[in-house]
Image 1 (cartoon, rainbow, N blue to C red):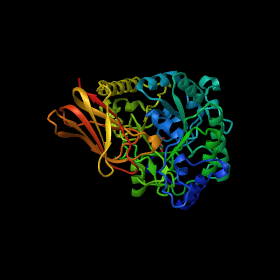
Image 2: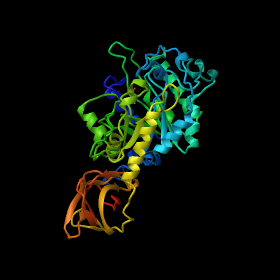
Image 3: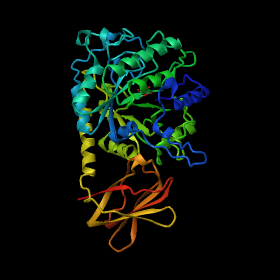
Length: 473
Ligand code: FUL
């Protein structure tokens, strides 16, 4: 998302839309399960939101690879203007299996491809426009990048997501709202019916038309209803969800705390900035009544598309490891962009960096303190305390805390301590939210004999956590 984005809907229109979504426009059940969690009984306490199976599966992926690929790869631009000749799309050695293999080896569980970016060039042979791979010379005009990507991903046990930009700088119908909505829905229909199961549909909110540009009024109820109907198991991503929200920046950093619940009346329009909106995207809302966890998208390079000039400016493995802690480690999911080059391959430098990133994670989490026997007991007030003896004293340098989010997100304040053998508890970590995963790097190195976790505050009855501790050798 960029600062240039503009919304095509007013806040009031979008609030109405959000209402329709919760009611189920077009007779389709559109609300994520969180919204239906409220108890109907008058006077009954309102149940807090829970994730749907699709949101759970999305979160359990933890890590997905983003592939920005298209005419920009060949023009060296970030935003094509839609005038690109299809013939420039000429990858010399495209091999989607390489993308999938590299993704799997890096530990990613999903691939998300830009089937169409803002330039409007379609990576599949669509019937909606001639501005596609079918008009390029690639594979004699018989090629289909979406097909190759989807097939390769499945061969490698990866799930697939598709990005189909609403903003289309090529389509003459763009701005002629009903006509373009028909075209866009037709594009989504192709993508969601011809390629098997799609795990995520990525709606980006960018629009750089400027004040005198074309104004398109997207028919979001119809668009989102189409996705629900054709791929009921997919999650939809945008600033405003409905299933998964943007995390509010492209630096790889989720907020801390980070609630998976949101107040849907705060971020109602994709593509609008403002302190309250960014805060809600970053942190979620502790008392939000909808489950909409945050996805952290960030590029391994300065840009989203491949530019040879950026080969030497890749994020380091250390920087990527920090991003792991501020995304996956903050109850978010990491969507790391690694763009294919003009050969249609992930470049050697990127592949090497992904290897280093994987190795850094493997090393950090290599020595798990043998499964600990935790004893949990309630303390006066709401606190829940768990203690576990260690088989042998260990210097804990990483911790992974997890809630059973099927039961919602509950923890609002916690601390972790270690007993250095003298019976006195010393701090290892402390924070607010945990959710699906909270990763900690305790700063003080001492050999702990026992561990203690205290849930000091929770928004629902506290439940025992899953705690994993990793030691230095
Ligand atoms: C933004 C787009 O404008 C960028 O080009 C990129 O696709 C990013 C992930 O989303 O909104």
